[in-house]
Image 1 (cartoon, rainbow, N blue to C red):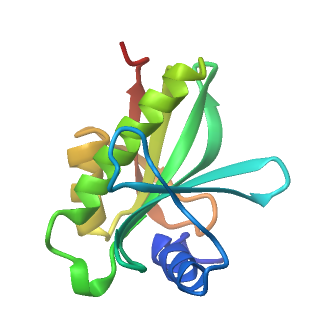
Image 2 (tube, helix red, strand yellow; image 1 turned 90 degrees about the vertical axis):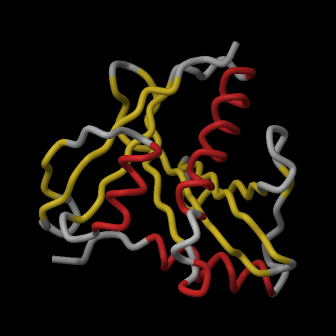
Length: 163
């Protein structure tokens, strides 16, 4: 069975394509130091990737991809990664909060809110569990990861429409 999806792979790929100017980003409306790249990794699959930058170096990365609807509303699975040299500075928590605020504003304008954010975290990944508990929900559900069969925790957050 394959391993759980590792967002660090997405960060590494994003960084390489961004440095080579294969992909571009645009500043977000709620935070001009947060940048967005939207793409379709597969037909009909929308992915939103948010980054913090120092020049052309990504210092924090979070990606949201569609997951199964919850209560009839869209759900987006979050994957966050921070380069080794920038870890331990609160960057993961900060970018998750900023990206969710941007999604809330944009999705509210588009009539998509409310929506859900989901994170599936490996049972042994304590650092990512702390990020999810601080940014998505302090509550978690024991699950088995569908890709790897590994024990994991699911964190869910309903994001309401902005005022």
